Amino acid sequence: MKEHIYFDRALINSSLAQIDEGLLTKAIAGQTTADTSQEDGGHEITNGGSGGVKAAIFNAEGQYSKKEIDKFSTVYSRGNSELIETALDDYSLDILIDKLEELSILKKDLDTLEDGNIFISTNSFSIFDFTQLKDSVKRKNLEYILKSPVEVEEAKTELAKLNANKGSRLKHEKRIKQLELYLKLNDPFKNYGYVSQFAEYASILFPNTILFRIGQVLAFCDFDFLRIKPSLLTFLAQTTRKITILGIVTTKRNDSLVPKEGMQLSSDIIASSASAILSDILLDKYELAPVGSYFVRPIAIYFDS
Image 1: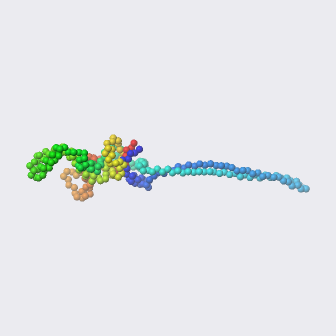
Image 2: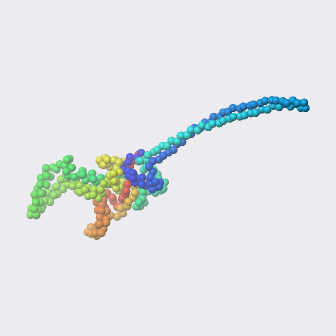
Image 3: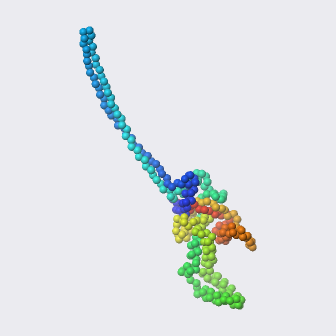
């Protein structure tokens, strides 16, 4: 039995329609039964008689017999045809996998994957929900459960006064550095601030998307096709079970798009490839997709028991 976590029904139906030359929505099995009986009957009629003729010159006698047979045979037949409808729904995924294997186009060796290949793979996984992360690490939300120590608040106040003007900054440069280091090490909101910046930008680059990292695969999953509440995804990532993905390879990350230090990109490259480059920088910085990873359009993600 499959426990579906992600299920793109439209993509499954599209693939089946192209394979079967039409959209398969349900399976119908026919079952026919027949009962036959025969009845025989009839009757037999025999008529007979005799007679004679006498004359002077001859004498003759005769007998006759007539038999009539009336016989009938009747066959009674009764037939019944029963149609059993099976709505495919989630079972359509099993049908698609069987069809792909029959056609020998379902890849299982990730080392030989090419762009456009349909593959299936099972591995450990991680989940990245940037929208939930962005909202959960906002300072106003963190303040419900996280409080700064008094010493930290006092250091913030002092630092703000010393940074009030240029003259003060020059005069108290050494003390300012001490306070900044202290806050970096002790402010409970500091690290969350970095995470917030990351999540805010990631949610812009990957709108309405949850990333599943499954082995060498990075799957870009649409929120609308999730079969599980986003709030439960946090705990799902802690399971020791391995998960299976059926998907289509978009491309392989063979090289990093991150510009070399000091390199300036031309305006036409920025206009045409900025989003891809910035996404690659983010994925590279946080090690979400090392070189050699596959970017994938998922068809279904599930646990198979």
